[in-house]
Figure 1 (tube, rainbow over the protein chains, first blue to last red):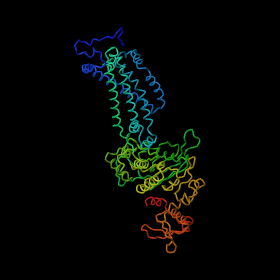
Figure 2: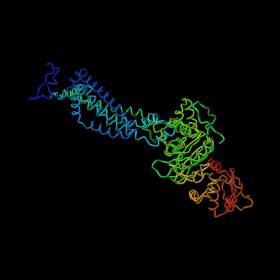
Figure 3: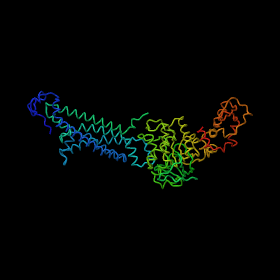
Figure 4: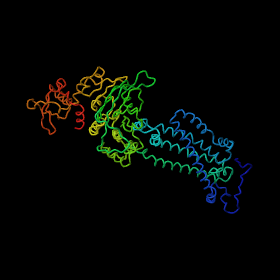
Length: 245
Length: 355
């Protein structure tokens, strides 16, 4: 799938025109701002949007699965071990290998679904662990008081356990989000979308690196921005966590 | 069992006073046997607590006092026997609904860290489905009652240990429960603040007259807080159930005598104030310039006489006027001639708290 330019000597790519518009590219500079402004709306912006969609879907599905598993493990302790073992294995498989492996699965192939399956599998361990730890760290006396005042198990979960676990849960979502934004660039190998697409394009081109630099920079910026937004969300949802004497 | 209150029903009921409900509590041969343990944690405990009385469960560790308390609101299941609140068996009640009608205070307080003081206090009213307005009014009433107005809107992390426990008590009172369970509520507080919280609670209790089951391992706290004290021994059997005065004057056996302490005569004197003593006429006794207020306990007065080398003391009333005098002989004879036997310990300790 990845075709590295073979042969000898630098290959000057044909940028589709011979006018002076491509002077920068022909001069073989590392970064051409003209290219960025020319290709923003046709290449970079769509790639950014695709990247965001890939990330939101992966983190969303991963969150739903890992939170459900954590709630089950919270009630039934024995569930934790098998979940950790399976998700740890998923987490440690090298991403390239996993993507290649999934492409071979019937019904998946080179599709966005395949990319999402891989991305989701990397979020599970992080979010499962964090959510479960958050739930387990709810102080015993707080649970005792809740039960003693007549809160049923469901109400205790919704009104006490989950709100108190929220800082840990959101911390898990933050790590998972940054991880997925980074890994989603590799997913472009399978479905050729997102910020990974221009990066791969640039890798296959030995000379011209502007796409790589810009798309890579955008992925980093997206990760920082997403993390920052999640920090703000956490602050808004848990005003008590910062309350101190 | 005079004033049987039919525990809260669902409908809104008016609150003429801050507290209006109290129910008698009866434990009938209550036994708790944990699986895999040779000895029962609690063995055939029978107790009757009148409505509006404070019953203290006291004993060494392993005597089952906390177990007994937690059986009442069904936090742990009963092995055998029965518990009646206001004449109704707790076994026939849904545990969750039952607990909403019983105030619950524990040593570690267990305030919800993510909720403000107000929201914490509103917990049980919300569970009972009270309207927003009624809940808010009740929360305000309790903040006033417990003197916590300045803590309104704060989070538990912003409170001191004593403040947290006050909020814990207010939260337990919010649903106007006919019965309160308190498990070593002041056990984690430093001695000075503990005494203050005890006094505050006695003052509150004088107004509210709830039925209270109060667990402690501290006999002095038991004597100070209790209308009646149940002393439990290891293995969860009842050693004696009596008023503080009777417990101190007539311990049932060696275990009780040791538990209440060798200074039990002094503790008994600590239950009465000089107001209950027939003072000597100050004119007949040579008193120096040493004075003791009439609101002092007999025990404190005796201590001052001893500090003065056994010399008599002048007793002054609230206006600073000499009301009489006390001598070592007078104080020393109080327990022997039964002069204090009639004194009601409860009122004296409550008054002491109020003074």
